[in-house]
Image 1 (tube, rainbow, N blue to C red):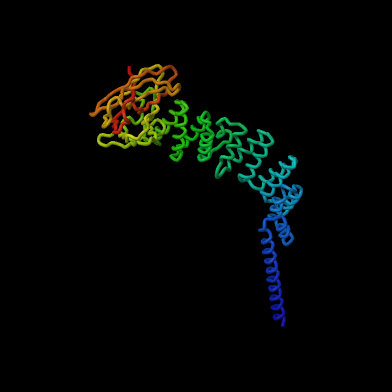
Image 2: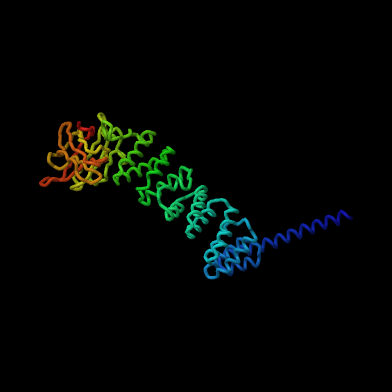
Length: 408
């Protein structure tokens, strides 16, 4: 008999538990239904059904923050009371206090968010807060800690730091040790066109010696060359060459030959100190084999004036140089306007110009020029400019080898 009574009680208790669970499940379903409406009325109904949900109070604060800031603050205070470990609610509460001018409570809430969650977002939020407060010491303190946890796209952090101070020393100031974040900072400076600041971060990225950074470093080298910053560009090129990240040798104005890839053993890459092939309609390039060289073909539809081949070459100031080259042409008559030109990158002034190129058989020719004071880099270019009284050339030139050396 007692066994039957105990069994009956157990079944009754279980049934009551199932009934309570079913009722709670229904309540949660209705609560979730109203919550998903994403309206003030819907969120209030959800809270009426299940008042202990911190996330619902956070949503209510979001929906009322603009029109009823006091109500939003009350909702967020309730949210953090229900879930003190919710860093997002602490952040939202701190920002609400800041918007209302209560900076003391704002700072306390944002610091509490960091205590509950040591990840990137709370630190980033505090850095922004002290930026708005124009408090550099505290800003850099939290920016440094945010950088240590940076993930995804760090550019917003770089931009914020740049608004505080842009001097190219952010890697050191934030103690950035992540190689990818270092590379992102260098890319950010290039994107901001702060080529004057890329020297220190370029050296830090070079220290990592990562193949994945080579395209970025070559892009930096190109921008430096375009600005006439020969020494900095040469430093990057030579480090990449020394670590075998590029298939070329290191260059120096003191070497017997200043040119890169003079025999065209590597197809022109159009980067750094290698040959550049400008994209010109009507002109195509191809590698020659046995013996090697570069063939440039003119269709006759190319512009009447254009650059065909370009290279930046490091030189010494106040010295005489000789450009020597081995070539042949086909279908290109003499005096039709295809020639070598050398210009000072500092001033853009022409330093030398060769004879028009035309040779049925392979011949060697040369162009002599002198560098002025302060000249550290020259721009060597093969230029076509249609001569008066001629039609546009249709044929090709094969360049076997090119060299530039001190004349004496």
